[in-house]
Image (cartoon, rainbow, N blue to C red):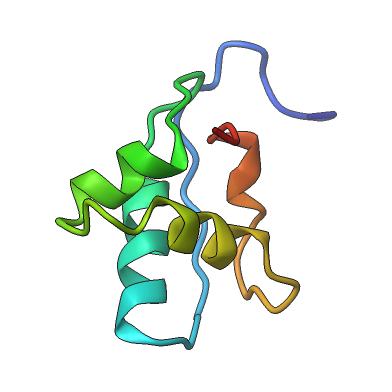
Length: 78
């Protein structure tokens, strides 16, 4: 990103989001993905205890109504 030191790896961004309990869980878990790390939607689903909801995680992250930075830069589509 322009204007940021190249060695910066931690970012703190404040935001307010509304959604279902499931959506909020997915978004919160996505924010825990470390800089440079990639995870699949299935990985996210397993981390929130919803092992059958990989596609649902993808839907949460692919929607147009988000009140936070795009988390897809931190996750890959599987």
